[in-house]
Image (cartoon, rainbow, N blue to C red):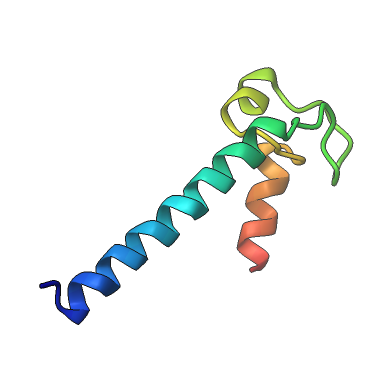
Length: 68
């Protein structure tokens, strides 16, 4: 007989898997911008491939993260 902790772990695993599957599907449908939303400069191809759905260049993204 499974105890409460086993049931909770099974539920947590299930919800984690659902979240990961949704994330994976959203990344496939997301296209990276060619130009940075902040500065307007072209985003390098390696960044657009590595970070699907990116909208900023590396420098502008670093500024955004520092502001948070």
